[in-house]
Amino acid sequence: MRLRAMSFLLAAVILAAASSQTSRASGQTPTASSAASRQAPAPAPAQAATAWPTEDGSVVLPEFKFGTGETLPALKLHYITLGKPHRDAAGHTDNAVLLLHGTGGNAHSLMNPLFSNVLFGPGAPLDITKYFLILPDDIGHGQSSKPSDGLHAHFPAYDYDDMVRSQRMMLDEMKVDHLRLILGTSMGCMQTFVWGETYPGFADALAPFACLPVQIAGRNRMMRYMAIEAIKQDPAWMGGEYKTEPVEGLRTANEMLLVMGSSPLQMQKTAPTRELAEQYVDRYLARTMAATDANDMIFYVNASRNYDPSPKLASISAPVLWINSADDYINPPELGIAENLVKRMAHARFILLPISDATRGHGTHTVAAVWKDYLAEFMRQTASKA
Image: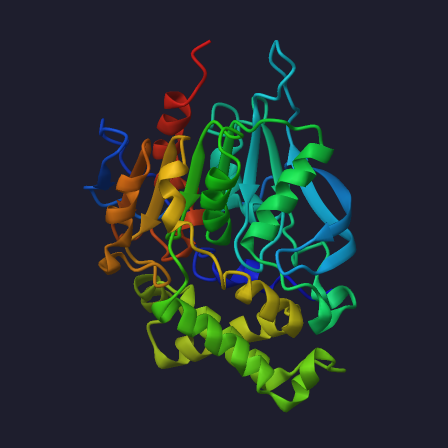
């Protein structure tokens, strides 16, 4: 199976170095919108991966019906976990944390040392001796059911609502009836808003990082549409029944996605000459082209087509910690969307991280050192007082 390119896509520019953390969050009221006022320190040297004790699992959901009306006889969802579940006096899980990956990623995307080494250790915000972490492969990703398994372009046209509903059904199968936190990055960020609206009360707190809770439109949709059409317009695509990957279309799509996930400051530092810039692109394409299936890409890029939680944001009752980065090309701050929409949620706080040597554009969502203190404070604020 050739799906892991997008796990590198939005993280393409964050792997060069880890980042030092920003200053501790201010004592701002929960409904306020804020921007971190001080520049983050320069990045620290890259971190080595930790051998975390993950456990693999999977569920099969029979006759799963999608929002389009299509049905899959058996929808497989794969996941990994860390830590052990705990139940309160009433028998409900009280320490489960759902971690949701981005477009084209998988359950291992957030095992990146820049994320896991900072958050999962003793005393860290998501200490695995205290919390039960659940990292799923979404529909169309990783080891879960996806077009490249055999249905190709005839795979059901899933969307974020389907993904969230399947996640809830997966948790039911796992006997997890409550979540301490949902933390989602990029696509997972958008799914976190959907979770808050669809299953109010199921999670104590929501942490959406690197997205906007509005319809995917404007330049964002244009870039996605161009990537999809580049593949479909390649004669080698053959309506999804290609014998070999449609290389020309897939190359163009991957180039588009590289730009989407880029950070101008970091890319200039990484490739300060023409030769280095071209070598960077060549290496990126060699890696992603070898790991991307064209049908899978079309489906997961298009899964956002009808996403728009904005009309029901007021129904989100759980506390929300929403963080974006000012150098995020996919969610540019100049749109002013976040500052307006955060006011619709009763217990939401929006933080815009300023551009610095520590941020990595859209990929800042994985560089946990930049925003760890905000998350730690949020976990303290939303802890049960019982």
